[in-house]
Image (cartoon, rainbow, N blue to C red; front, side):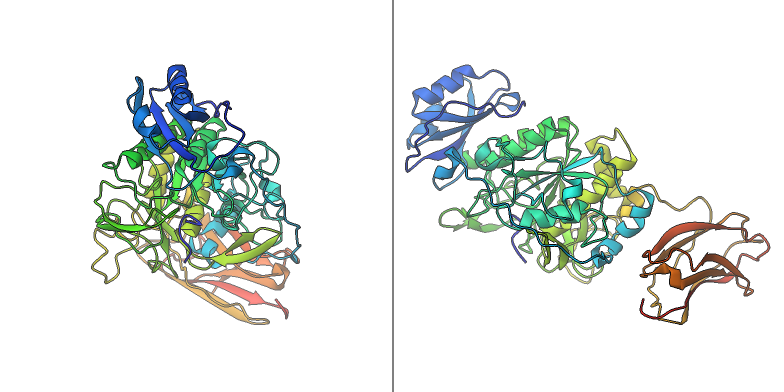
Length: 547
C-alpha cells in the first residue's frame, strides 16, 4: 500500500527575493491574529522575507537562509512561536513555480459498472435517492487533480481551485493539476460523474475543487502548504475537504520539539479557521499498521532528509488527522475486515471505509486501482457531502455526528489489538460509513425485513431471493414498500415480481426500460389480502441472452 501522504483572507502576496539562494529554509512565525506589521518588519530586519501571510489566524510563512533566524525571531515582541517546517531547503521552484503538465486525454468505452467499494457502502443505492447537490463543494487537498478527465470535468470547479504548494495561493489556470496520480484518484472516488463511462463517485452530483498542497518532484505536503489549503477551503465555502496525507517531514509532530510545536499550532489554527467557516476536514489515518493510541517510536522522520528513530508518546500527533475536529478514517479490506496496512487506535479512529484495490480515475482520462487509507478517506468525504446535500445549512459538527451515528457497527475480529466495543473500537471506530443512510433513506416505521445476500441472475432463467417475515399479526399492509436493488445490464430483459407466502405474484417490473442498467427503487404493493407471516420472495425472470 502506498503511504497515506501519496502519504483569514487568502495569503497576501509579499515582497521577497526573486533570486533563490542555497540554504533557504521555511519557517512558521506565529503571532496573535490580526495586523502583524511589526513582526513582518522584524522578519525583514533579521535576514528573512515574508513569503505569505495569513493575518486572520496569525501565521506568517517566512523564508531565510540565516541559521540564527528562528532563534532571533523568538525574541521579537509579539512573536509567540517560530518553527522550521522542513529540514531541507525550499526549492527554487517556490519563487517561480512551473505549471504542472496538462496530459492528453484518452477516452473510454461506454459503461460504468458498479464497483464493489460503492455497493459495500450502499452508494449505488443512495444515487437513486440523492446523488448529491451541486451547491456542495468538496475540496481535494492532495497532489492536484486532472480537471480535464472525462469523469471529473463535469463536476470540476475551476474557479475555486488553486495550488498551495510552498504555502501561497497560485491561482493561475492549471496550477491545481496533478503532479502525481494520487489526487486525481481520490477525486474520482468522491465525485466522478454518473455519465455512463468509467466509474461513479460516492457523491456524483456534488462539485470538486482541487487544492494542490503537494510540491512537484517529491509530492511532499509541508505544513505551510496545508495551512494555505485549509484557509483557502474556509474562504471558498468548501463544505468538506479530503486530506489523504500527513504533513511532511514529520510523521508525528511532538509538542516538546520547538519546531514541531509551531507546526502543530499553525495547522491547528488553519483547521479551526476552516471549520469556523463551515468546512469539515476528513483525513486518512495512515498506512503503517500502527496503533495511534499507543505511540512508542517514529522511524520515518524527517522524510525530507535523513530519518532517525526516536522515542515518542501519544502527545505527538499525526497532522492533520489527529487534530481536534478532524474525522480520522481507517481502511477496510475485503468486506468489513481491517485492511492489513491500516493504522488503528481506540479513541483515535472515527469511522472506516473501503480502502483496498479501489478503482478510480487517474490523469489522462484513465483509470487504475490503489490501496491505502488514502483511498478509504474519499469514501467518507463523499458520504459527508451526501449528508450536507440532504441537510442544507448543516454544520461541520453535525456532519461529524451523523457520520458516526449512521455508520454500521463492525465487531472486533479475534485480534487482541482491537479494543473497545462493537459500537466503537480501535479498528473501525464507529463503523463503516453508509451512503444510503446519509441521504435519509432509513426504513419506515414498523416491521422491516431485508435480505442482503447476492443472487446471480443468469440468462433465460428465474432466480428468487427469500425473506422470512415473522412476528407480524394479521395481514400485510395495503401500502407495502418493496425495495429492489438489481445490478443488470439491459433491464428490458427482466420481469420482477414479489411473491407472497401463498404463491401469489405481484408484478413490480415487466420488461420495461430497454437498454438501461440496474433497478434500484422502491415499489408500493397492495398486499392487504395476504397473511403477513411467512416466506416472501423477490422473483427475477431473465428473458434474453447476453446480459
